[in-house]
Length: 103
Image 1 (cartoon, rainbow, N blue to C red):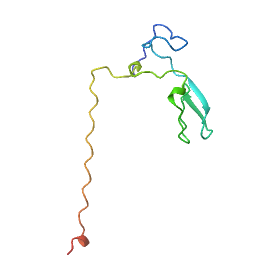
Image 2 (cartoon, helix red, strand yellow; image 1 turned 30 degrees about the vertical axis):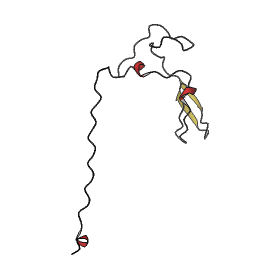
Image 3 (cartoon, rainbow, N blue to C red; image 1 turned 90 degrees about the vertical axis):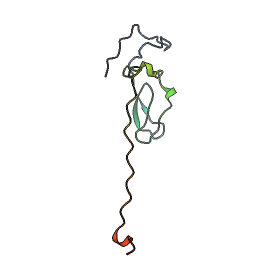
Image 4 (spheres, rainbow, N blue to C red; image 1 turned 180 degrees about the horizontal axis):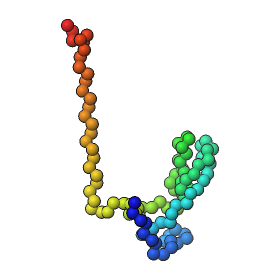
C-alpha cells in the first residue's frame, strides 16, 4: 500500500474545501440496525448489518465519499488492466455404461 500524501492545508469544516485535497481519515460510528435492532458499527454514518442484511443509503453518511482519483492506491493512468483468466472448459458428458449401450 502506498503512503497517503500529507494535505497542504486542512479541509474546510463545511466540507466545501478543495476537491483535490485528501480526505480526512474515516470516523468509526455506531448505531442500531433499523430493521432488526442489532448493534452495528460503520464508517462516517454508513452502515451494513451482518445479521439481516440491511444497508443504509450512502447519502446518509456524515461526509462525502471520495472520488476514484482521490484513492491513494489507485493504479497510475496508462496501466493496462489485468488479464482475465480463461473460462473453465465445460465438463465432458459421462461415457455410456454397459447398461446404456443397448447390447
